[in-house]
Image (tube, rainbow, N blue to C red):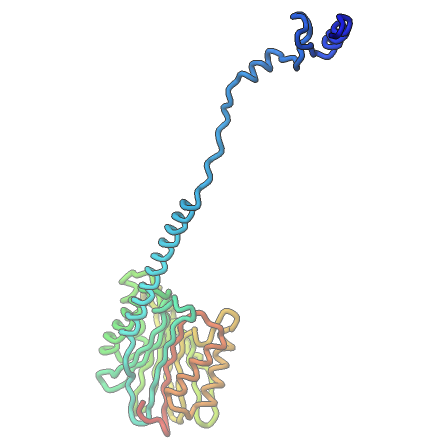
Length: 322
């Protein structure tokens, strides 16, 4: 057993260090750390921190992912249904055949947008007028959806009805424009309307904000039309559309296109028209259908994302029925 002196020295050391020995007198310093009252209250205070949110389980994550996937699939299916409906509307409204006469051959081609998601904007038409003249039209409606396809049908039907009573292309385009403005759809369309007399070979045309036409003759001449035009259809009532008159005296081709044929994201329209002009001059003696196919293939150079349409009027020697 240790002596009293040992315990005294240890008690003294405890007073200096705040530690007291086990079994030391009650007045001696504590053997453990000295706990002050503030620390006592802090120690006695209950823990009131919020627990972190529970992590979602793998099953819950899979359920959420399944719901999002299902929603995305429904949206894709809805959009695809609208695209298919627009395509059906357009295909049904485009003419199954174009009029032709001895010495006059016609052909038209259409291709949808490259993405396959946009359709319904471009259109063409051809029909026989009551007096025996032939009417041709090509146009491009703002937008590429069901509404655009329906509007295209309105333009085509209105133009056919008005052309049956009006012989001047400028009047046909002007009255069509006024009708569309009064309908108040909010959409607009570019268009070129052509009236061709198969006997005299006189071609009269009016243009509503549409891209220029291309022509070439068998003797090597070619060019891009510079016809004066008016605003696109459906923008402003009372717009006037000047008429350009030309006679197709020499064998050749007159080609109407939409901007998807001659213009792309990095392909300016002037360059596109120049490309098509060279092609038409080189193939001016080809069948109208072959020429239309060639022009449509040339559109691939533009890198276009838009749909595209071509209408070829092949006239003169060697131009039989299409």
